[in-house]
Length: 274
Image 1 (spheres, rainbow, N blue to C red):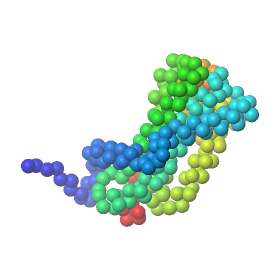
Image 2 (spheres, one colour; image 1 turned 90 degrees about the vertical axis):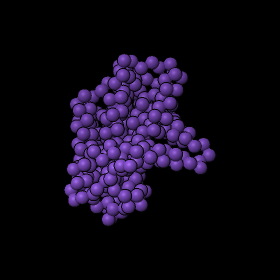
Image 3 (cartoon, rainbow, N blue to C red; image 1 turned 60 degrees about the vertical axis):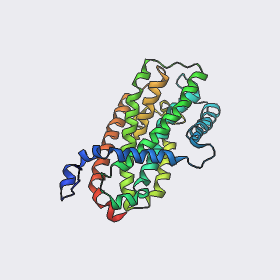
């Protein structure tokens, strides 16, 4: 009986790295499925936490920005405006938290077995994406409750989901790699997530930002992602600031490519440092 043997030679794994990503796809499935199963294990309400957290955040933002501050809602009910932004933001924030600790959590596996380390943070992003899909049920419920029918732009939503995925993956790779060497990032990441929530247009529309500051504001890559989600879901009244969106798109691409480059550069040291 023939068996496939993986021979690790100097330089060989470098040449076959991207092919190995496909060969180790079952490990990718296993890590993602394991994390999904244990994410809400031994909790009283289980997976419902994926619905409760974004829902309560939406309620608070609706009261503060919609009722008290009376900010514009781009022609849509304010809860829909907020939740159209909560979806990509929650996905991004969860991905950062999961990715930053993914290599540390799987230290025993990394130090003993060869496989492309890129599998680990990638599986962590998938886990966050599952929460994203579950949270999408709240958006569907809100659309039905307010009898709000999206326009044809809703067909472009997968494009913006892909951009959100790229932003999450790129930033997650940077944080995962840096956290192996500098454990300070376990404290920095929660601060980044909290600070990012305040400077991103989650609770309000980015249209309230003065025109002279819109371009600078768009240097936050999540601005373009959030505006894209609202443009696709809300419709004609949610205008997409094209120059800012292009800047966000370019920045997301740079973050993703640089994240892959840096991760691959330091990947060979993980087993020694971790």
